[in-house]
Length: 148
Image (cartoon, rainbow, N blue to C red; front, side, top):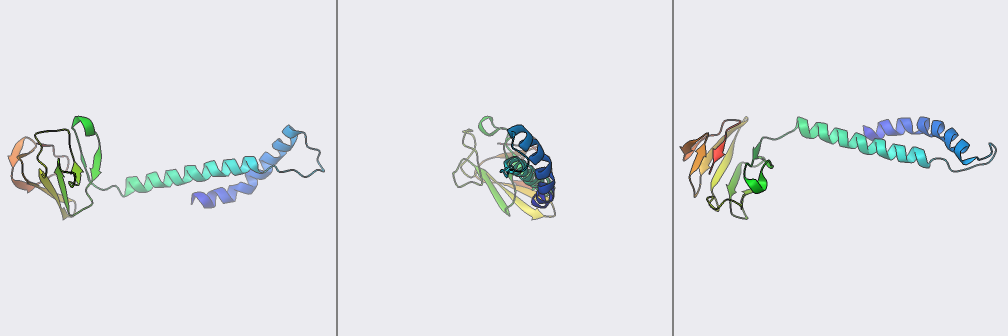
């Protein structure tokens, strides 16, 4: 859509800007000159802005549920929960690797996507607390806080 909008406005902007460019360069009215550079730059800016806008809209609209880290090295980082099973731990093979916490085990816990926006968490090699309560396995309500 950004390309269509930019293409529709390109000639209009080009003709308006061309008069100003010809006057600024002092080109005689009957002499031919290249004056499309400014309109091309404006078109590129409009195209880029349109693409960025629509990417932002689609990302917001199709946002996947995620897991946000509260640990120092990854604080605020969000990992989307796309897979059926997401492993959290210190291992490099973990879907959500968290290396800065020595209390975390290599394969600490697994978050499972049950469908329809429902998730569960299962402790792996370490103890898991959900909203301050120890769990071996159980539902993971939206907005839950899990500690070690």
